[in-house]
Length: 115
Image (cartoon, rainbow, N blue to C red; front, side, top):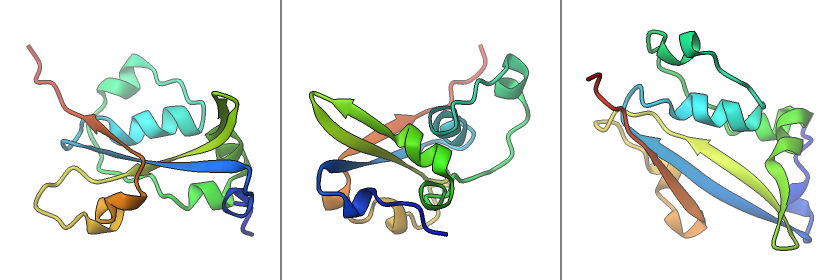
């Protein structure tokens, strides 16, 4: 079932923000925390890295995620779409941000070495 109707609503501005960064920097966890209202424990934040990617399809198939993407900024209704990328710099990322003309923002996440 396709519940994503923001693209069909002229009064809602859809904002695409691509999250890029190093492997294991926490890009997916950051997106899940925002999109799913998830609070992560210190154990979860420090757990062994398992490569993941947040699927943009979540905005079409999950009503809760779609509703949390909506907000009002300066009296304008917006829908923030966070796009996840993988941190492997040797892979081709054109799918996510090859068409930067359609991307309104980029968030960089970097892993900090343990001191």
